[in-house]
Length: 67
Image: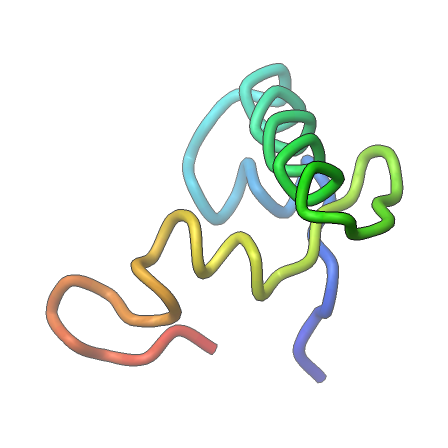
């Protein structure tokens, strides 16, 4: 089953960043979502939004889809 929300630990593994950087990304993306009128949960971010922001809308640069 695919995760629908990511935590800082998930972002650390996915992006290869430190824990503090992962939390920084989550805060930034949650602020963006709040400005768009979405409700957010502190410390978590929707997986679909992570794919959109980091992987060009769900695809890697070589054209393969992100699950």
